[in-house]
Every structure is written in C-alpha cells, then in structure tokens.
Length: 193
Image (cartoon, rainbow, N blue to C red; front, top):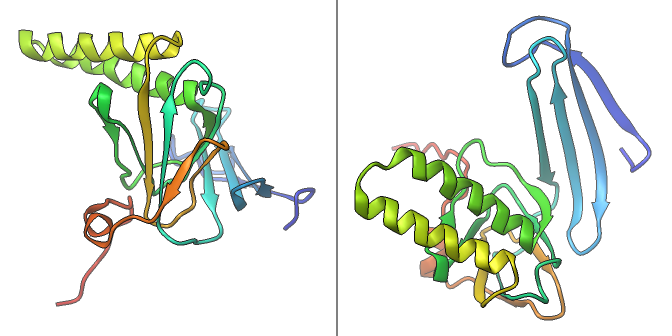
C-alpha cells in the first residue's frame, strides 16, 4: 500500500451488527518525524457508529518525550501511539493505554482539551466534596494552560517508541528499565504457566 492506495471494504457493523452496511477504510501513510502508519476508519450509515485509529507499523526503542507546556508550545505537533502513557504531573492528570486505546495526531493544546473533557466527565461522577474540589482545581489549571497562562510539563512514555513531540525543545530520552516494566501497553498478554 502507498499513500495513493486506499483499501475499502463493506463489512458487518461492529455496533449494530447489520451485515454489509459499514464501510472500512484503510490507508498506509508516511508521517514525518514518526514513520509508517496504518490509518483505519469504520463508519456505519445505519447506526452512526464511527471508529478511527492510527496504528504504527514500525517499532522503535522505548522513549520518553518531555516538553514544557507554555503559551509558545500550544501549537506543537504531538503524535501519540496507542501504547503511550500521557501525563501532566503538575495538573495531576495521566492517561494510560488500555485494550481500546487509539493513536492520534494533535497538538499540545489538543492534549489539554482531551484532559479537560475527561475531567469534566469526572466531575459528573464524583459527588463527595473533596473529589469535586480536586477536579475543579485540576480543570482550572488545565484551562489556564490552554489560555497560555503558566507552565507545566507534558510527558509521553512510549514502550515501543512510536510517539513523538515534533519540536526543537522536546527532550527525548530512554525509559529506565525498572520504569519500562511498570508501563502499561494497552495490549493483553497471555502467559503460559
């Protein structure tokens, strides 16, 4: 497959189960500073189901990417693979990969927006005063960062080295072995006893 070649199929919808209505589209792309990826999309016109993913086709050495979030870095391009952990320690937010994790390409502001949405959802789940206060403080911190006020640290830990922060200011380093073993990958491992 090359960038001009698109593979399309009509499939059974994974959501509504109707045979022959959903469209599956796969396209191989070369993303600068990242490498080859497979972009997949499934759309069902019957029930409205839509799922998109970016799957890295190359494996690199484990890597840790760190950049300061400030008013000048909000537009910096971020590639997050489906196996990466993303955190902003100063805001107390972190997302780890799970079996349904998706890769995506965004920018630093987009990462903040994703965390903002998650915290807003969490506000509806917690009813105790301490959790509400903590969530509101976290939300305010994220919103101030989005406005370009203050600084924080964006950290991406990727055990397969497939993520990237495209900036001259990014610090890229190896992940220490003990930390690497603690990272979630989003993949299910079955061990034979």
